Length: 404
Image (cartoon, rainbow, N blue to C red; front, side):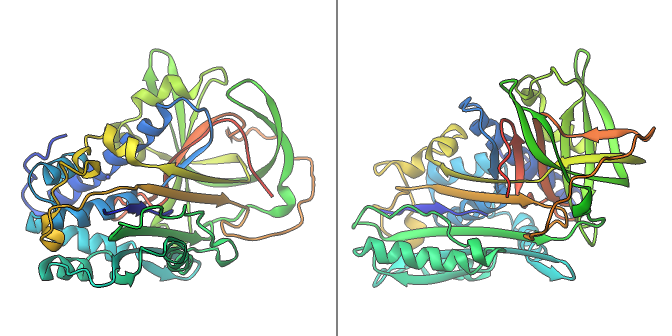
């Protein structure tokens, strides 16, 4: 068996445009589309809870599996992603993009990594092994799946080494149950940065937040007056959304917030119209404006079984022991994916990092400056602008805040 594990922290594949510029544009759009489809698949369950997911750490394992998948199994992976890694231009672009997504600089740290845990003694295809060594900071690790507790602990230790917050490195990976398991593919994306303009701890105060169910919650609301990129866009009929960009230091990564203009408009009404093309238009149509910004201080963490989600995207053979075709991995015809798990967490604080501080309650001044006040359900996503990679992306903030 092949348990595939997505940790923490992408259509039918058409002809790509000629030239690197056209290719880059199309792949960025495809990655955004995949992120949207993941988000909509999860929200389609109607559980009404806060949601955070990392499309980048889901797409990388699916890309690697394309190197070992054959027949209809490979075709389903290509259709779900919208591209094939067997196209040399796509292959080269993705390697460059993944390298760019693993960076470290003043105030910013992004890490994208993948590990292929293999049963000791399993013989892998040399071609597949070569691809792993060149893909997304990937590596091969031997383990003994007949000792599931020890294997789970080993995987958790590996993930902990890439989590930005070392004090909260526990990823809640469930124990691998099958002693017949032979391989586990683990992907992690970790991000930590500082706002380009930090919120002041002394300006944070407890204000009201209206949940989806109409409950009035009291939450710590951060505040600042800043020059930001902002726009208002028509979605359906008379329904509008306000879109705000809050950049992190260096400006290559930004947090985008999508807030219904009318307080009575539920997110569920707008979510079907959240598309890759709409997001592209919004991002390229924002205007510079001075605003009063109110944003809840919060932490969201989710744990998903991704089998149903990926199956809804057309990836079904991968999980079927009789239909899965992964002969390119080791030459064996009995490998299939038995588990697909995704853990993700994100925390938004005044300085943009994992930090603590005393919050003072203050009265905010009245102002004629336009206001962006996220005091009701909203959607937001974290995006690397140069490659279009969704770092910790497409999240719905729906019912409650979880804060320190």
